[in-house]
Image 1 (cartoon, one colour):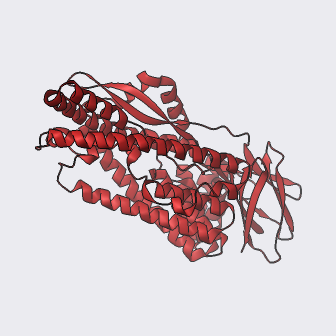
Image 2 (cartoon, one colour):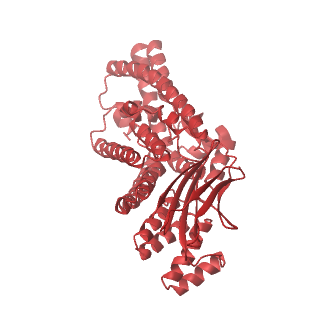
Image 3 (cartoon, one colour):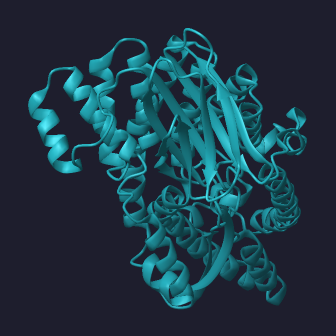
Length: 477
């Protein structure tokens, strides 16, 4: 972020500034229209997903749209939809291209931060017109879903690469975010985003806080850890699998599936003290011995929350008011609570490992100080420049600066729209003689019978619930 006073006093030409402001005003006005159109596209795509029409949803994101500032978003949408269609190789390609573009943006940001501080554009442009590089939790999920793609094609080595990438990204992003928070605190000029937010919409603030719930850090993703543990166990690396299960329970202490696997693996590895610890914490769970045919179900339902704009006044420390526009979430309810795995006369229910509403809320609350500090910096800069324009051109200059400032302060409402509301899992060891299992949503009546191929030792079931029923893909090992 550019220091405001220095940028304003570095010999900027007022006439040049006026031309830039007018040009940007036009570009930003047309950019807002583009973002409105993008919102409409994703709205239609989300509806198609809810109806189980993944191919129709994919037509909203053709490859030719994966260009410009929305390239990452289009890649992520395409990757998710191709995965739901069972086109795992194509999905992996899209995830890889999206991840590579994010890396490119991040590296450019580092280079830009080291340049001279007199760059005008970064103070005038808001988050809305910048290339979308993904939220931090989205960057981690890219690799978790990438690992699923490789699992579903039987490529354990490819899955290992993705889980290593997930580890690396969690650590990198956490460190980068901590540095951004330190910088934001210094540059926020004594303003308090929480006070301003609560005064503007206390209900929204409380809702975000409530949704974030027990998510202490988005940089510990239980779904990524659980997929990682599965990959390691399938590859015979049980010690590594156990380590990741312990990380997973820290991120999702409520997950019954992770609890059961912790007890099972600790017992299998001969770690009696650990087994006693887990049983004392979670109770003695049924079927924790891990004998028989291994069934691992990944169940998704609902749709991710939608970003909306919240604008509110922010008092400046030197007097006067500015206006901030920050994204907030609208949460989309789902009629589905969980899924059930049914075999013989037994029923086992999935448990939550990734709540997109909660993770997105925590991510947004964590990002607010940074977003707010950027807006405060822009507000001070624009106020100084508008004052210069007023002195140079009178009323016309003042109006020009005011209009440009108003147009540029818009919240970025882009988000990975095809993510599910929740990801749940269940892992069950059924008798080796089992020939069929049933997966069904609850309380809905959607259900599918799955035939188990002869000789199967491990069966992965990947499914998403829609109004048209369950979409299911399987992979036998």
